[in-house]
Length: 307
Image 1 (cartoon, rainbow, N blue to C red):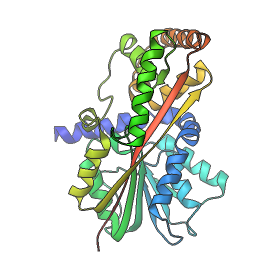
Image 2 (cartoon, rainbow, N blue to C red; image 1 turned 135 degrees about the vertical axis):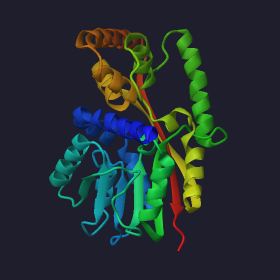
Image 3 (cartoon, one colour; image 1 turned 90 degrees about the horizontal axis):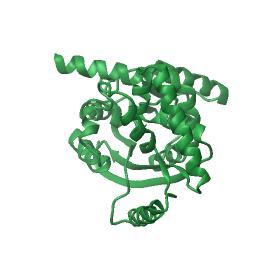
């Protein structure tokens, strides 16, 4: 019972921490996550008659991408953040698309067995206290012969073209840092400052996430355990330059669970002091010729529910 209560409390705190940043979340997601959403839709080989469930939909970037390919209103997105769902509904209306957005727990989906042709998810699994249960639920609601395609935050595997490129970048960064011109990386830069400025709060990340730094391999195992077959994966990533210190702050406060939750529970004067130092440091860094960078990467995993 205590474990269930702790899980429920974490879900409530985590989802509600997004309510006040839903507009910024949507803005940054449109800019940085849309290429991954499009890649997921392409890998899914979406058909016009498919019924689609987007788990952990957020502001609906993936559900809306699916809605552009489906000739029906059979697109459903679920999330626990009411603020995010409100933004998703507004965006669908503005874009003239059809999709339904429901507040729902990914670990206890309120759908009958064998309901959907396709289940998709992007950057959501690491927020679930029990991803094994969430994956079992995705398997349950998927029709026999259906597909699942999910994206989970991950670095590229070492002995791949992307992994070698990432290794060379890290080596170059070490050299640049010797002359104080290395990149400031989101979300690590703000999280490092937060760790020195603001007290830790309970449940900053899901417990499973704390113990699984390499998501793609762990998720492949979870998918197979749930009953999925033909599990395949690829990696997609990009490196984006952020133009101003203010935008760099907004980005990290929105996407970093650690920063968002600690700032939300801290005294305003302490947060103001932290932000002033952040802006000053980043401005000086750019004046020295350094860059503010947001590097994103995801393993995209495909699997099937065998007939």
